[in-house]
Length: 595
Image 1 (cartoon, rainbow, N blue to C red):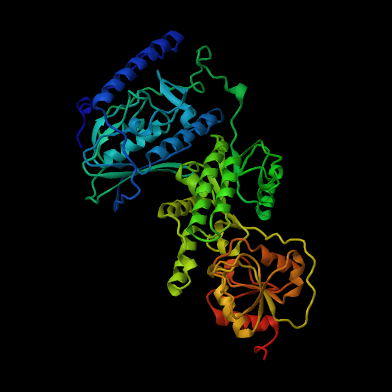
Image 2: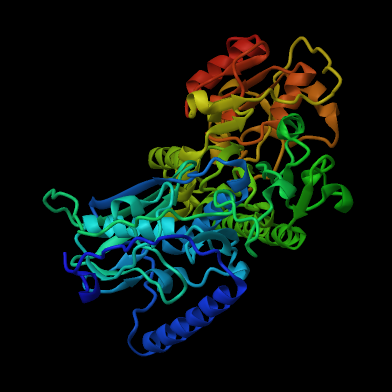
């Protein structure tokens, strides 16, 4: 490893006899010096300085060549809790700018060129910053934890250190005690290094740690580089420790009290199961984000109860735009799914307004999850997910297998989400501590992480009992992934009449050769069927099945529909017309088709 000239010799810290209490005059002089240094650095960088590097999702390296893991929550004192929350929020914003950056061989990486100025306009908040020997409140405070981590990883990779500055004071929980720290201050105190081989930076927040990894080409294992640096001999002070109540910077913590964490509930479509769950789980200090006020706009889909929350925010413009885009899109195909995903991203971005630094727990709808994860809003927080469908990776794998077996069923291969979005959702689901869903097929994927809710049965009158009947209902829509082909084959084999619910998306002649009619409006048609049948590959909202279950109508379905086998519910395997025919014979009470 090569060091810049100013860093080749060990620095020796000179002992200071006593602390000098900061004054307004000394602070003014310090600010003037800072302004001069910033101007000087700006002019130098304008001519010859490093440039902001690009992210590269496509670049993949086979090895982790450098890694740093440090605790997020380093000070548990109540009076410091708000600043700890602020630090973690600042790390979220900085990590979002850093994660995925590709540093070519021989190119100088600059911390500040990559992160940019830590301003409130860009989402940075107040944390602790070392200034004149004191840890003072400052916008962007706490970013030194990230620069320390980058420096540690750069040493492991044996980068050339172009610029690095040590802290002047020891800070509890920091790398200064080992001499492997790198302080930063916009823009004149920077961390800059130059790798000898290309690296890709991965930066993430877990619930408890900041993780920085350098991905690069494999190399022989080598001991971590050691830099002969004298360690600071003085400990940084803060208003919680110095006792200088006469200082003009003194903070009266007792007047403010300790900060408290809160939960943000970010929802999408109003499922009754999730509505009841949130009603029981939320506290008065929690916040709520929803697409729009469904009660005000008379849209039951978004009619969430919003009383009892300290703050409520919505995204009405983005939600109405989604409604228009989906209505204009075809009933089936890539354009419709792309419109749904793009609109969900806009809604998620708007609802991030409720994710203030004091939000330590997020309960989020699955539709919003990958976008919040990808933009770094969930790191350092406890996350639980309201799951309404299979994870995209599992969903697409299931459809790919079915399409390979039946390539003539073109709707099975209509749309696949981008690999980046699939990966973002998978990472976020792995990070989440809980998965909340009433859907049994989804819950089985997550084991002990799953909280399984009871399905909410609608209030309907029991269906009339009919002794002999060969009329069944298919809750649709008529499309391959809902099991339409298997049902059609069974209906032909058994001579059944099919009542369809939903759009017919497999073409106008799909039901040719089958006695078929559409369900009449209202719930009365339930009394005219012997069973409701849905041999689906995927099913998110089995509402028609639940209505039939509440009315006492027998159900034949696959596990993909989200129900367990129980009285009135027969579970059959997907893609198996023979098993479906046998189940229909058993439920309908006959063994051969009529003549």
